[in-house]
Amino acid sequence: MIDTLVEKIKKTNAPIVVGLDPKLGFIPDFILEKAYKDCGKTLEGAAQAILEFNKGIIDATHDLVPAVKPQIAMYEQFGLPGLVAFNETVKYAKSKGLVIIGDVKRGDIGSTSESYAIAHLGSIDIGGEKIKVFDEDFATVNPYLGSDGITPFTDVCKKEGKGIFILVKTSNPSSGEFQDKDMEGKPLYEHVGAKVHEWGKDLIGKCGYSSVGAVVGATYPEVGKVMRRVMPNTYILVPGYGAQGGKGKDLVHFFNDDGLGAIINSSRGIIAAYKNDAYSKYGEEGYADAARQAVIDMREDIETALN
Image 1: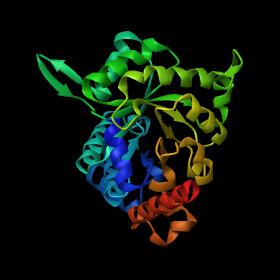
Image 2 (image 1 turned 135 degrees about the vertical axis):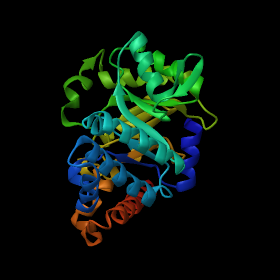
Image 3 (image 1 turned 60 degrees about the vertical axis):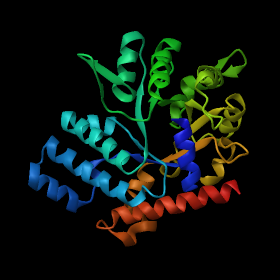
Image 4 (image 1 turned 30 degrees about the vertical axis):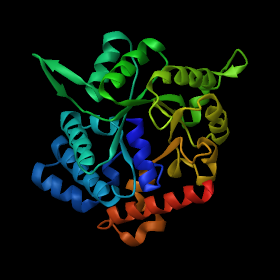
């Protein structure tokens, strides 16, 4: 799957993933009003609004970016209807040719970890029939239970041709409470990065990168420099651009000399761009056009920094 992602990044010249993290506060009133009219102010109404909102974003940006990243908690909060909206979002994005990074941050051991991997990346055997479930292309995984939590995912990745992104150094302010702790003269995140490199050795594609990637926040650009050295064959998913403070100039060290090696996530900076003063001219009705322009501006910011 990493070869497909890299190919699409090259084709679009946009190492960008759009985070589909919808909140009701991001959704224009005209979409909410229709959904509430159809389904009432219910979980089903909220889920319908989310799906229609997502479709608008996907329609406006699918030719500009290689991938989208739906964050499952934003859907789970609306119960079963929310999970239906998550599933339909994945299907719709795939129909537009996008790679799907399921931001699910699963982390457990044994059969539980295997079940998570099957649900998001694999197939479930029902009476001899192999059936796909959510069927994302990549999933985010928490490594802090060790290899017992990762191996079931890498096994499914090998079988299904899928990939994972493992949390290494996250973008949130308190990440250092654990991730920066000194261990044998190095911060914990460096040790995790070394394990990610090790876990990914058997999943290196033709592009030279592994289907086992890492998550390293844009809010810590110096860490990107270190991680690029520790994980030379690892693709880095970089959250924290835009609304969390990351800029194009902060991203340079996450990339290799070939201009590859990283894909940058922006969520509300794109999907809620119409609420930003810079894109207010588009208004609520033009929320998708605002998102498209935000992607174009982000692409130019990254390209300028890299060049």
